[in-house]
Figure (spheres, rainbow, N blue to C red):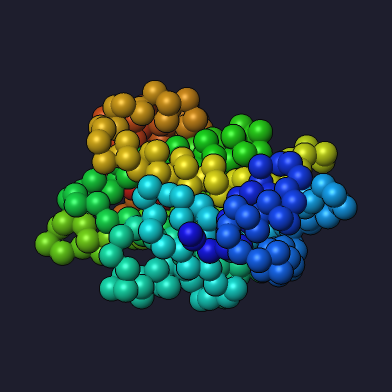
Length: 320
Ligand code: BTN
């Protein structure tokens, strides 16, 4: 049996009353052990009511993600074999890199807070405690390093779809690494690679999602949070969101391993927010205005610059 607290959470998530005796029988433990674990779940932020002769019932999820729910997701995952949950760290990217030799398979590092969170181009990624999701996923595909552009396209689709499915939103992908809602950035990801002679040893993909409205989100003019974009009555279930995110990451990672970009190209394009707009593109120190026309089968953006030349952009900073 996996961890008892995870098993009890799984039973409670069935959305019905479960008696202490039923739990004790099913898990082959004492009722005192059940009671202790119920209390431990309560201290993680779960509201669990207890009604005489009916049993326990989960009435509310924690406001933030819970380590037990994440451990349960990873225990059920066909891809990830390990999860590390940290209350604070400099950056989950650095933590994930340091753990490479300790864990053979794919794993996740999650932190409640980062003190040196970073984004693309070494920009700061503000990561105040329990306000956003800060995670790094480590994957170990046996593929050439040149495939990383294709990886970003699959993963961007997984993140954008998860936000929409879990929070009933319409997010879009700002090529290559950002997720936007209503023209503002809600999430960004950063893909780093550990490689040997052009073959990938590990991908460390760091994902940041602004969940709650916060001074740091408010201070950035084109940033937003899930909370700001949500209908006031909607309930924020971050356990549910993490489940959706991990499921979609698994699904799109498997597709990335087995399929070409052309298999998701139309789906990706339907979410892209860069087409038919004047964009400022900064690539390898050069900055120019251009209009994005299409994305090719290799995942390169085709743009029309102001001199009428069609260029292919591989990886760039783009301003809408
Ligand atoms: C970007 O938009 O530039 C990418 C932002 C990536 C932020 C995440 S938060 C978790 C992980 N740890 C970091 O230090 N950065 C990534």
